Length: 456
Image 1 (tube, helix red, strand yellow):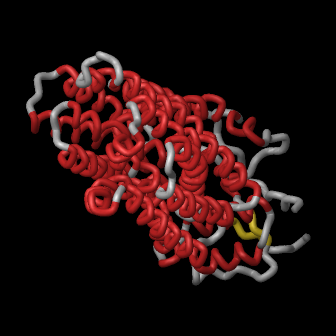
Image 2 (image 1 turned 180 degrees about the horizontal axis):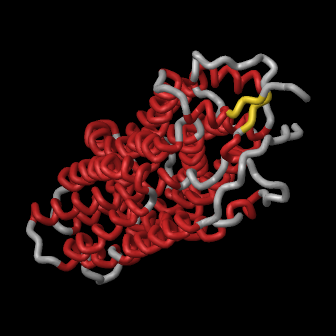
């Protein structure tokens, strides 16, 4: 309409002052991500109890680990697509309520087959939530804080993973392993109800799709209370406008410089996930094999998760200011540490210390991968881009625990596994370095133009 005022949503977001709206979004995202991490990874601490009750071999246990991760692969694609079609808020809510119910149901499984099925379906919901939470938070903060805010949200996942050890030690010996999943299911349901009451839709997403200008105005007024927004304004996303003839669907993820960035991002993510999920799932049992008690192994695994959080905190501002190359540095440092852990002559405490250092750099690099997985894609298909990245990464997440199960079932010396893992951060470092070079010399972004509303 001629003369209709135009408001650039991205400009309002870039120039906002710190306020309660974004802080509340980060807090509720942190809470649901906490239970996402707890529900996904507590099986590592419950594993010894499952092994005893269901008489599981190490290969069978590895399959149980991996089937949940395979579910997250499907969930990232499915919910990522839904997030770009129907919106971030309804898709996040669907995922949160689904894995609350399914986590609760896992406590009542009475056979290995039931465990496999419930963990697989639960993985779909768990895997669908994370990419959408990242996308939603990215879309409400200035560019200079995007990696930082995703890192903060992902600390919820890390601490959720870490708290699994003390909760299991507290509940499982007294009430059985099922009590741990009942606790998780109830907690997740309460978090999902909190989301239902407080979670906003993405103003960037709505503007990019030409939907609900009334909601866009409401959210922008909360972000910038002093900003004058005309009632009849048309909203655009000026820093993400796409030229005529731009590709859609998965083809858009390989547009212009993305044709190199996307596959390199996937390769780095696969390598990181392979190492991280091997350590997350098998470390308690590996430490038991090496002579540590069950309580020592569980406690160390929990403390190691805190190391990952520390690594993410150390890295986040460097990622925002220096770019992805900061993540490559973490990968480079991890290689000699893993070789030393696997091949060095280490005593009881020195082995744990080196492993803790490995968790700081490898965990920090993995959190860094989460923080950049959505920043390269515009709002119109950010959820899809992030969903594809996290889902493809699950190739490594599935392979790590499965390969670990076969190695542990063989005569291969257990300590040498750490030396083999050094391949993963080496691949990550090379892929991130190449991606940074492409980004530095890539095509200039398209100049802003107004977007036409999407037909609905």
